[in-house]
Length: 140
Image (tube, rainbow, N blue to C red; front, side, top):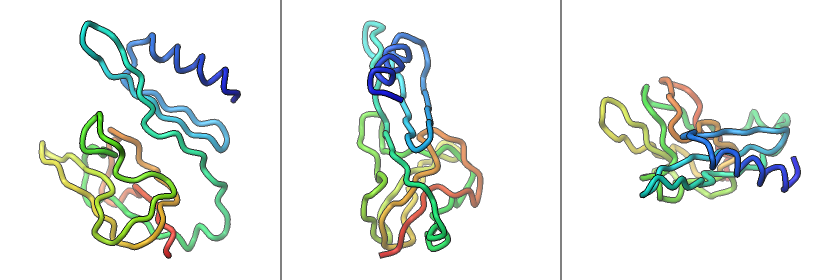
């Protein structure tokens, strides 16, 4: 998709009443979220544009951070905060990588590994199941 088409798509989403929008085309993945602001103005925020690398036989060497519970996954502490991690970030064992809300409690999810974030497969506000992969880590 060309840059002009992406900008047209963002304008279309901005003028709608959508609260979230995900787009994937080949290697490019984009997630947008519409946040209601004061006086009815809508702000479109890019949550995380990602250019995914094609997977190969090395994918079997990736470590997986899985959901320890059923709930709603959040990539950041609040709507206006930066995501805990993005593709390409280095993480250390014990570092927070997201939050799962379960029964009105916010549970910080920590990395069990040292490594580099290879893929984030759970989007902001996704419902997740116990044992569902959230993030793939390439070991250092």
